Image 1 (cartoon, rainbow over the protein chains, first blue to last red):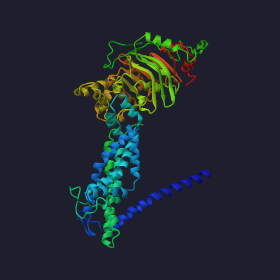
Image 2 (image 1 turned 120 degrees about the vertical axis):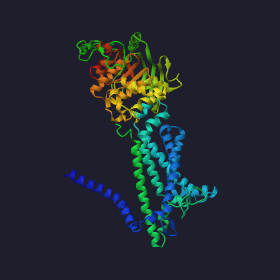
Image 3 (image 1 turned 90 degrees about the horizontal axis):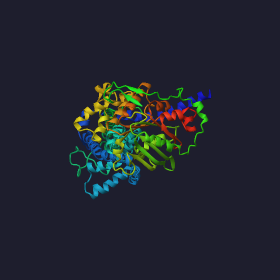
Image 4 (image 1 turned 45 degrees about the horizontal axis):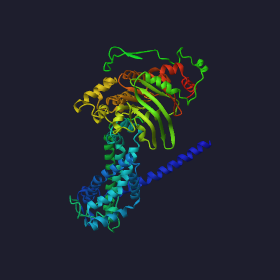
Length: 281
Length: 309
């Protein structure tokens, strides 16, 4: 009888904890979709912002451009750094690297933005630009990518690592052909989460990317760029209902992009793990 | 000990193995209960050095260990091992759990170097060459001394690539001949018929026994001179076990085999020599027949009869 009561109490606690996590998430999603529902139209997606009205074309294309820049810069550095930490990590240099990366992960994003502002926007004279924004985001997410890549590689069964070594394969070949294929799904997940984190960032971009009503171009410096989080952050404070509508729409669009990103990540992971899906640990 | 009819043609699937009657625990010739009248020498005795000499007299030693000490951090696991592994013979390393069998095995191809804190003293010689001191390229040592693990560990690549990767890395055959060589290796372990239509598929779809055979083919493909086996059949079913054992016996014509096994019956079935380890020391080393019929040490006998370990 006592066991039964304990059982019920524990399950109730789990239920409450679950509800505390899930309900706010549902509330946010439903709230945003409901608030923005009235303003969904092709014009919203395909016209740029003008003042506090217009559409979000400049913002969502700008966000995608920043995400692409981020992927190009952060993915190679972060993944290679993670490989280094996991495979050669006992050396002194690796310890320093890990310490630096952990410190960087703890720096508030607004400070990262401010540093980039001082160095690139002011000192290098790039002014507000896509590249400065991309670099700020890159610095934000590199520690995250490094850590998730390192963890992904460490999760590969020792058995496989030793198999490659015992066959006399060079370490680089073992990493490329044996460890990375096993770790790739987790590395991809890490990249997707990193992109998602960056997509939701506002603080480091305000100082670095600025804001623009026009569409992004191939000019990466000397020209500011628009992005969705700016609309959410700024327009909600404007005393116009049109601006509020736009802010909610931007938030909804962010959610949709996020879901697409996660779906894309899943798809790539599934393809990447063609050979390791049935590995028996 | 093993005769193969006609020539030792491994490509032919029709080879037969004629086994001499190995003493088995249930054999009448080995009456262990009467063995206790002998006074076994103490563990620390130099008895094994004499029997090692006997082993050497019967063949060329391929791998030789001299006063091998291994420790991880502060903890010494192997306390001065002297042993010889004879060319073209199967030597079984047996002993109770934790006696250092696997550590010894993994020291022979420098695999323990992956473990932090690993420290080795003494000599491990392959054909007279110290693999820890005289070697420039450890990868070539590992090619010459192959290893098959306790659990099958095919690489997350296609079945064909699992074999081809070693062929290419060690330049075993010219690039154009890799595919044919893969077929040869898979045929040799008797896997070709089962996998020829799914060479580009994942190896993880194969059964455990097939995966282990694939791993054996992968190891053999790079032309090893010695093969280390860490309980190679402990995760396999009896039929696959039989298959692997038959292959090992057939392989003796070109490699020396060192096998860790927990299975005394298996040691009796296929090994020519036995090295019995206990608490990081060689207690007894001799021909399998001699060990099973006439163990000189009480500890060995206790282990073989199941009174220990």
